[in-house]
Length: 145
Image 1: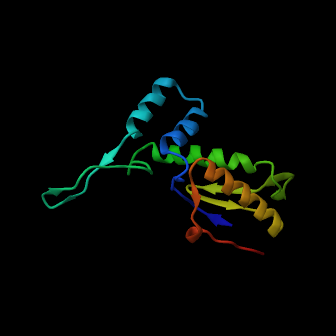
Image 2: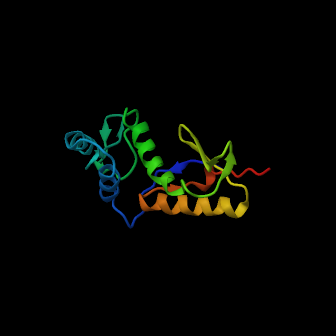
Image 3: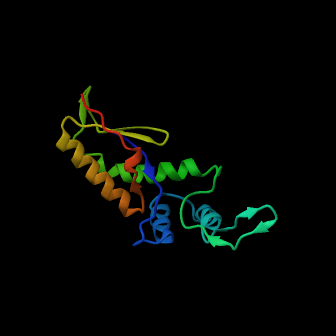
């Protein structure tokens, strides 16, 4: 099963709460953490059409386009989510249990049966929702053998 994460914050959790939870869970120097927070907290943006600028609105989700930290943020969030499925049964090859493979922002979940795959997907979905991410069903594929 291939899928990508949709970066959508659940209404029940604020962006700041989620970011604090995620960023505080990794081993990062307090000064560096403060720099990251200052870059992303309380952002606003306006739209300019010709010479007219709209009212500034808060940016409630996502990362800055082209920001060098964006891939790192994605990897941190992804790793936090996938740690929850580490012990779930996947496909054994060479004596190793493999239930996920990742490349860039794509993730393959693997299992020997539909019920095992569903169990992995359920845990992953719940873990994603806990940190404010939703599964984008439009970008999800399921392959069977």
